[in-house]
Length: 345
Image 1 (cartoon, one colour):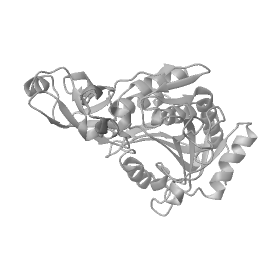
Image 2 (image 1 turned 60 degrees about the vertical axis):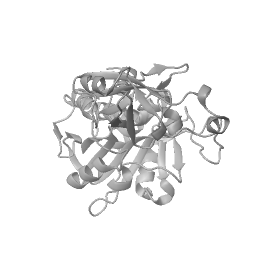
Image 3 (image 1 turned 90 degrees about the vertical axis):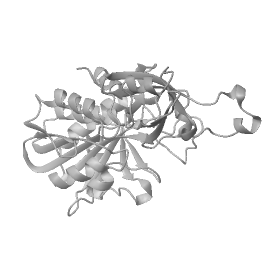
Image 4 (image 1 turned 120 degrees about the horizontal axis):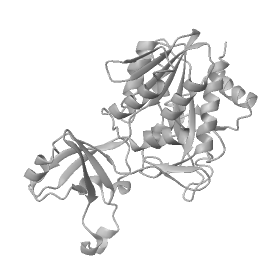
C-alpha cells in the first residue's frame, strides 16, 4: 500500500485510549507478512517480532488518539461528555463527532449556547467543555438509548484526511498515526539483522500506560519511539518557542519536558544523527520544556533502556486539522530504517 494511502487509512480510523482495536488490526494486516510473530499482550499492545541477532530493539508508536466519552444523557436527549487526553476546549466547539456504539456509528455535533443569546460578558469568555453537549438529533433520553448510545460510549472527531498543496497532509489523529506509519514502513524496508519488536502501544494519551508495561515485558537492549513533534513555523509562535519546521526533515529529540521526560543518552543521539548525516537526510534537533512521549517510561523500565525519539514535525497538534509534510514522513521512515541497519555497538 502506498504511504499516502496507509496514512489515510490510519488517520480515518478511530481509536481513543483503551479502544484501539481498529488501529491494532491495521498494524496486524500490514506487518503479518514481514515479521515472524505477532501477539497481543495483556493490556492490548500489539507486538510484532522480527527475529534476528543481538541487540534487541523496541520500536514504539502509540495507537490511541485523544477523544471523548459519554458521561450522561439528559431527559431531552442531549449528551454530556468527558475528555480523554489533552484537549484545548476551544478546538471542540461546533465539531462533528462519531459515537461508537455496539449497534454501529452514530453521528452528532458538539453544541453550546449560541452567540446571539449571549450577553457581552459571556462572549468574552472561552467556552469550557463542561458547558458543551452533543446533539444527535434525538428528542429525548429514550431515543438516545434506543440508538445504542450509553454511559461510556467512546467518541471521536468526524474528520477525514485531506491533501493540501505541496504534499502537505491534514487530518485527525496524525498524532500518532504518522508514527504508526513510520514504524510499519521501516519494518517493511529495513535490512536490519537485529531482533526488532515493533510495538503499537495503548493509552499513551492518558499516561503512557502501554509503553510502560510492554517495555517491562520485553526488556529490549535499545528502543526508538516513533512520534510527532510540535512545529512552530506558523503565526502565533515565536521562533524561540519552537524552531521545528515542516519540510526540514525528521526531528530527533535531545530533551523533552524540560528533562522531566527524556534526556537522550549521547550514544543514542550520535547513533541517530550520524545515521542521518551518512544517509544525507536533513534532520532537526528538539529541546522542549513541555510534552513527552512513550520514551519517558521506556527508558527507565527495569534496569534502564537506552531510548531515542524520531518525530514528524506537526502543526496544530491535538486538533482535527493536524498538518504534516509527506516528505518529512518519508525521511523519518528512511532514517529509522537505516538506523536499524547501523546499530550502535
